[in-house]
Amino acid sequence: MSEDLRRAFALIATGDMGGARTEASRFGLAVFDERLPLRYDSNYLLVDELPEAVSADDLVQEARRLDRPAVMVRDGRTGERLAPRFEALGWTIHRGLVMAHRRRPERTANTGLVEEVDEAALRPARRRQLAREPWATPAVVEQLLDAKLTVAQALTARFFAVLVDGEVAGYVDLYHDGRTAQIEDLATLEEHRGRGYASALVLRALQEARRAGCDLVFLVADADDWPKLLYGRLGFDELGRYLKPMRLDLSGAAHGAREQWFCTFVYEVDNQSEPKIARRPMVFTEVYLAHVTLEDWRRNPRGELGTRTATLDRAGLGKLRQNWIYRLSIDGSSKAASFGMACLARATYSGSVSTPILS
Ligand SMILES: CC(C)(COP(=O)(O)OP(=O)(O)OC[C@H]1O[C@@H](n2cnc3c(N)ncnc32)[C@H](O)[C@@H]1OP(=O)(O)O)[C@@H](O)C(=O)NCCC(=O)NCCS
Image (cartoon, rainbow, N blue to C red; front, side, top):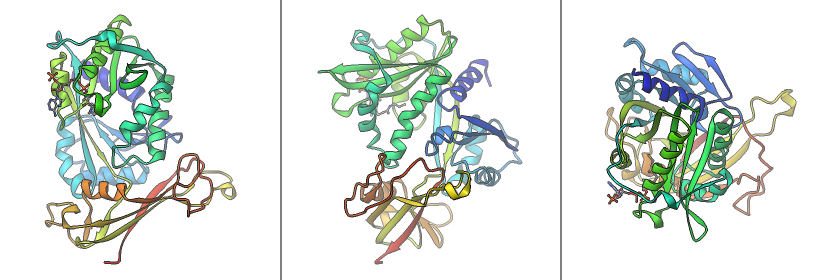
């Protein structure tokens, strides 16, 4: 691993993927943040290059033992070796591309459009942007937003926006320690895209990082998506890769893939408060109901539509997510008026059970 990549990973581990505490594991380090229990980037197993003898099953077992829903594999080769088995076990893989600023940008943008703002000023726009994700329940979204505050405790964190008629049209974060900087969480709201806002945001954050004395400025792109091309035109080159297998909370598993009505109940259990008598009752936080067809099931190598146990694919889970019939909002009030549920304090364990019905 190059020195610059090591520095980039170290900054990520301190800031964006920093937890409240760590525990040694056989394969690396387990990261925990009980303040943000639903955020994978605060609760994961961190591993680097691993010997051939270590399998995905070993890591899944270790992640399960430590109750970690994600594994951050900071070595592209190790990650790719393990990826097929993780996928066969039902985990979703995110491939990250670490890119460092190395060249003069090929495109220009009006950085004068960009203003520095408070973290809180970005929340409404971030909520809108995140709401598009199939996994974005209200509780998850708020924890992702609160994570900005924990990053700000560990590093200098600055927030930038392009405002149009006083409203946030695009935003980006800058995290740095005075030597190394990360440009992170870039987005332009859909109706404002294609006007150079993202380019302006990245170039402004880059300028600020250089001004603060950082000689290494990097960002992380999705290796499987197009924005990496935009970053290339802004002067960023690949520094390295990582893979992040994640166990998605909303499970869509059933016996046999077929057209059916499918219902999932998501619940949270307080398994940590002490004394035990103070533990909060189990709370159902979400209920989903969707009519799924054969197209909604995950294809996998063991058999086209799975063996006896079949799981919904990303689009199928998205369908389920969109068809929520009950969700407990973060302030504890139920979104479906006909359900009167007790107030939800911060829970420490979450899971889901799915059941096909009316098939
Ligand atoms: C990526 C994103 C921030 C770009 O925002 P933007 O304000 O539209 O970006 P800009 O206007 O500065 O530049 C967009 C450039 O990408 C190009 N582009 C747009 N869609 C593209 C696509 N699907 N494939 C390739 N290039 C594309 C545009 O043509 C434009 O280039 P051009 O000016 O040379 O024509 C925006 O699409 C977004 O918020 N996406 C969702 C969040 C996201 O993916 N963030 C990045 C995470 S790594």
